[in-house]
Image (cartoon, rainbow, N blue to C red):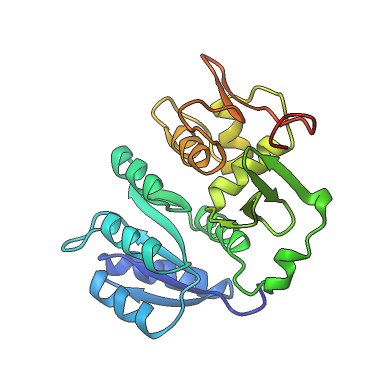
Length: 245
């Protein structure tokens, strides 16, 4: 990303806003802060934001409704900030289309790693020509779509762009590197999300379901990313000789 990335931190706690502003500014990012939804909307109306750090629990308009508003109106990264026990809210945030999440209290270094990961995926300064000039060797067929590993984009076989969050791309990249190999949820979280798995973490299942709706002709009967009961998931590439290839 050639320009200085603009990050908006939205949290009703002034100490959290100040800490995040101070730390990320020192890392070379441009920061704006908002205590709630009204201020966030004003900022987004004035200027582009590359990424929004969004607290879920806020008085008035909560982070989930704001995430839905951002996803529907802007090509902006979203990292949800949740309390440790807010599993349900975290799941809903991922279903809405958040790119990642961190839990309070968080280590600023972890936050920085997640910010950099999302921004790499959303590199908004990439020229459009880069997306169309990609080499075929960097493309992997996933059902009715082609994943471009270099440009980090996906399109249908007919050429229509298919939006991906950073976590969805990382999952597909992990599958692309390990075709016909069963990957457990633990392995996928480690490979794609860089976080340990726990029995209550449904983020992998949520992501797989979202991906299937994009790549499978019939998401209810997946043929490309299959579930291996009691084990995990496996990516089954379509052979060139198969119909529809």
